[in-house]
Length: 258
Image (cartoon, rainbow, N blue to C red; front, side, top):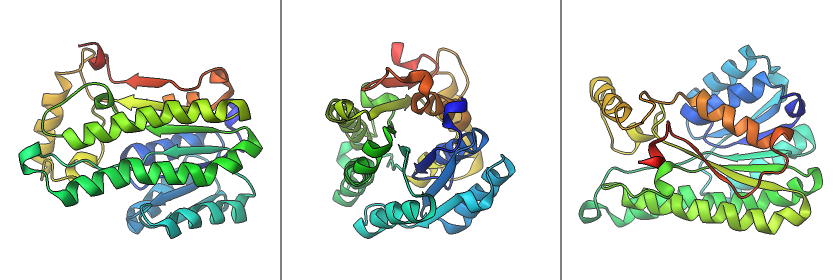
């Protein structure tokens, strides 16, 4: 995808999992990168992977912080413009899930999930959109299979991703006349940290069992690696999908068909 070369991409939640995988794939395609995350050590490791993949270190900017904070959002934009002068791509990947049924979900868990998965995405996109209009750029929101398929015990997460899918389509309609495309990817289970952070499987053995169980729920069998989804994101922001906007693209081994 030669059209990605020298594009400036902001990737949120880039310190692990799908965000890190997307950063590495974009580095391989010659993008300049602004990477955000809350874990400084993990973000440094992600930067090193991007350098190994071919992106010079001086072409990678980082912002450490919580995107629920408006000041952090502003820092993402300001640092990107100061370092690179423009923005071509925004990948809203940062997300959160708590494993809890309705009866045991706390108000704090509800607020945190909706603030990270919806509110931060909304206002960061609002902030970055004027720059994307200048470059005729593109947004990809990282949603989930459960945005359109209900699942027990993660109801708030499902709600947040359903809201994100609707926001993707609404924003696509708003920005299409201005030449900006907005799409989402909707993965099934991906090897990442998200479920372990949200009070999920606590240790390696439990997580391996979780992945084995999830593997059997995908018609293709197996679990997606971050790069499987990242390659779809790269396609969606490239010229190869120049007439695609407002789409929610499943990358879930066929699970949405069940």
